[in-house]
Image (cartoon, rainbow, N blue to C red):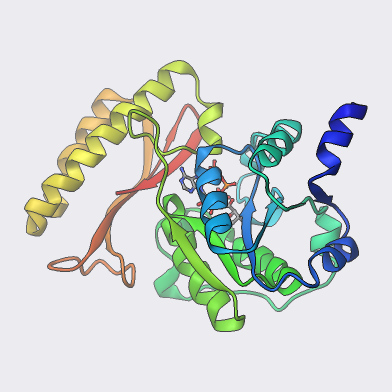
Length: 280
Ligand SMILES: Nc1ncnc2c1ncn2[C@@H]1O[C@H](COP(=O)(O)OP(=O)(O)OP(=O)(O)O)[C@@H](O)[C@H]1O
Ligand SMILES: CC(C)(CO)[C@@H](O)C(=O)[O-]
Ligand code: BAL
């Protein structure tokens, strides 16, 4: 433990808000990568992008309770702080911020509300989720004032809402980083570690079918609803999954106006009681 502590001490591990403010006070070109831990190559891609574009990089690990709409999901969210810190040390991250709930929620902020048009996809099925995400990132940015923040394309709706909210309120610029996938194109995600072997393999097959569906819709966009209906039927027949949504949205405004427009296929489904999301 002592050696781990020494090993980790070289990396600025910060738990107290005042220590954070002191540590970064002269860092004008700071890159910020917010995470909930259980780090993987997807987070590594964000960190590498921050290190390429910013003088210093700060990574936060905070499993934000207010964005969880399901107690079990919060309770079972994967955690391995020791492994995460060693991972970040190897990546030569400058600062790691590990706040407590009390540190983050020390004051009451104005209530954040989504409008009706935003109540789609994960906002529709995870009541209060994005209000929680926007609130916690508002608090992080107010505290850190990074020049840039980096987020993953895997959570495209999150990026879309966060970019709009944060860039309207702060000078921080929010950047999207490509989704990192495994060799069978399954999007890396902390929750993947909660899947048993069968469900993990099934998720890889489902991903392959969704990638094929995206190609079919790109070729034949006007029939996208029929193509989605056909695949949904096949997935229900062959897999023990519950699909929350499988829909196409315009990538500029997340509307359903996709004819001759850039669009993504969005999916959220439960497999083995684990909720996975992706977009293609
Ligand atoms: N496979 C990935 N490729 C690129 N970015 C990713 C990937 N997975 C997560 N991210 C990004 O990492 C940041 C932190 O996400 P988080 O810590 O919730 O990890 P996660 O893998 O998304 O976990 P989960 O989806 O199970 O909650 C977010 O901006 C998220 O979009
Ligand atoms: C951005 C974030 C770290 C805020 O808690 C979380 O929503 C996540 O990990 O995507
Ligand atoms: N990156 C996903 C965050 C969440 O599921 O709360």
